[in-house]
Image (cartoon, rainbow, N blue to C red; front, side, top):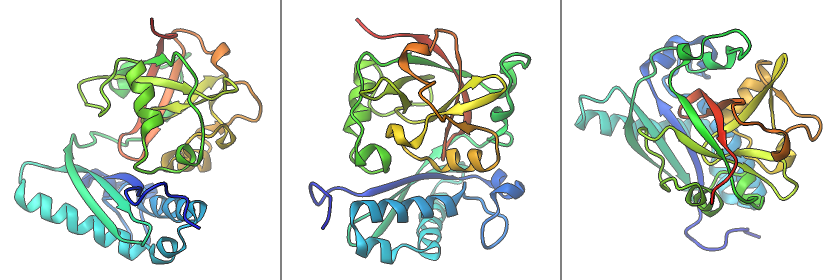
Length: 268
């Protein structure tokens, strides 16, 4: 039986096309160097999500060739009409029947390996080497977790509500380097509205467990596999033990790794 509340619900994947990615061996896919960020990982997550939602037809239709060709058509058509664009964000949606669609929008090309910020050590490194730092504001109330937080879909109300409480626009814009840090009913940190997170706890970056209800992001998976972050094994990442000024590693499948710092603890 389908879990979808209405026919408008789609599974969602957000990735990017960027020429720099084809120079990074860790991003190679089944065909060799790839200009799409961790596309095989996006496929795996879509397949897993389709299974969790009970979308058996979508799960059967999802395969790497279909996903890559859908992205490639959208990128090729866009770049043919916009010669100035070098890199684009790709938004892929999958219907319950298994139909794939992709749309693209311009983004700033990566200047260097987008995972380099994961090597940042707050105790010794200069943060300015890794680009502008996000200001992270602790949410003023907990966010309920559900199938729609542990899978990425077009049902985004829990994230939109958190952004609204933080005074942030629903649709993130590159000019606003701020986000809201979310937590569940047990006060366990989960994620921000657009990033997975990790906190520096000497000598590691520690990310919330998937059991908190956070999204198991594609870059989160890759960073765990590489040993650059470690999953929390206890309740160490709670709302109550996050402090103003704490460094936070932020990561998603479009922007790569970014740095953030805790700015304050709520709103009036």
